[in-house]
Image (cartoon, rainbow, N blue to C red; front, side, top):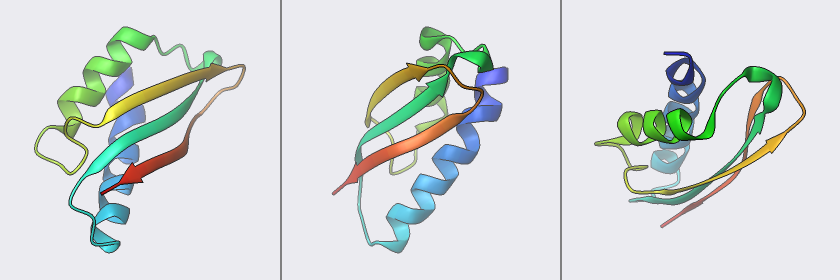
Length: 80
């Protein structure tokens, strides 16, 4: 699944940062998704939900902004 390859390192990175900061939970994740990646919103959201289960990102709100580019970028995230 292409979405998993893009999302997994993002989830691991955010979870590691949240743990380092002593956060209990990630509340919201804002990502910029390049249109040239070929990623589609619905499968991307499904993969995000699946990959965040059991992590500090579980149940985090996911905000996606598509742009003309070839990568996925973390714009920001909110922790508790």
